[in-house]
Image 1 (cartoon, rainbow over the protein chains, first blue to last red):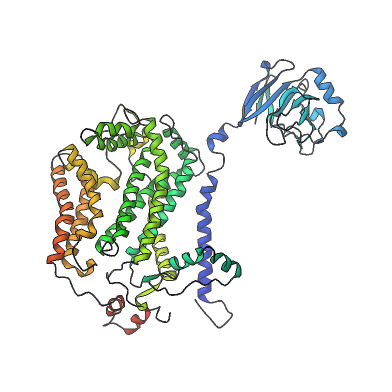
Image 2: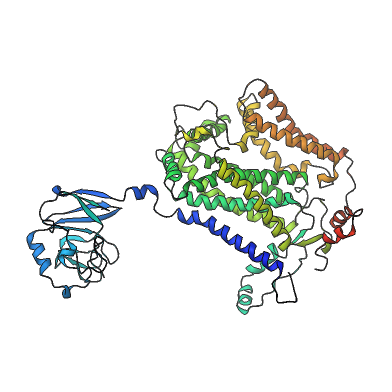
Length: 188
Length: 424
């Protein structure tokens, strides 16, 4: 094309670069909507919080509610469940981190950090019901640790939703939630 | 046809690949070294523009399907969901809807170009017929796509068009029920139209490949209609045609963007923002603008079957143009009488389009009849007879002569500028 004996960039070199740069900007601007349309749309985001009435959950019962298309377990734990969870030393845990979206990321996985916050609320355990291994829904009130047992690959969780036997690497995640009244929580 | 350069791979890996599948060489000989007539004007950029529009329609269509629900009770709401909830959904849908109109604007210009410059004449008959098939597929695709939003115009458009087939004696009603998958346009109809609307663009893409293949076998026509005779008559596709096509595309996209961003609903109908109601027909029902000339013909004929046959014949006659035009001279540029009749015919087509948008009453119907007769007379009477009676102007001996001859009286420098390939 533009063959110039000198090493100096020519006017044509500049035009090539400028045109190419403009073309790249245009292509990126065009690609943007095509990529952006794949993300959760407004109607999905609008449904991103769920309220749960706790008066419907009897002692010892685990109810499952749907939040953002995922199961969330709300467990009204018995005093024995709580005592057992509290008696477990942190050193016995596979995952020593609380995995509680309402606390700091490095909070230790004590029962206090896993259960609901506030006086008289420690019986409430709210966890996302998805095994941290490959996403199956574990079965409640089962397994060696009286928590959850995952039928897919045999992971077991205790009565604070902490993983006690692999292959799952992490404790069941705790979603962001808050008490909107003494008997009602809002997840998300 | 001899090329300007041949592709010879230098890199050993490319050499290895090329000896097993000469893909890069094929692309090189088709879109880089392919010899194009040196005198192509901007009417020749519409082939590239049409390819671009096909890609645009398929890309936006594939994305819209990710958010659309093909069900009679959910389709309308899912389209509104695209417009309101989906990130950039409004943009993608308007691109698709206006893109269809842009596609037809480009295809009509492309067809008029072919008719004016005699691009259908030997040896390009198959190329022309493949183009007609693409046009037919486009019409079917666009019609079925317009049904998918399931608004009032969608529903009643589908009802009217499918009822065209009821005009055929004896088998008509059975065919229509078969098309509907029921006793009226309903969910079954919507679902099959959706399926076919997704399928047909890929069939179009397939025929486009044949169209381009046929083009590359016989070579491009050019404004003189004289075949390239020497290397001097052609320039390599890249950079000459690529840059010219690219510039044409950019200008066309500006035109497209104007519709897209400023008047996205100008070419649509407000009634289509009312959910389909099988119990009430809108007061004025008209098809999309690109069908209007045919719609005018349908209504011009006072018999049901006659109207349908007339409308279909208006497209079928295009397939026979290579044999209806008897003139030995290819390009309209050297045919003084043809040139006049061509522009009259263009005016007739536009007139029919205008009449198609008017109510079918009084003077509109009479005018529709006159123009319909003229439309067919152009192909069946004017084209065959012109070849026998017309005195064509002198055709240049070669493309180069036509290009350089124009500048004979002017400064010789300008002749040098328009002969950039002489050293190649």
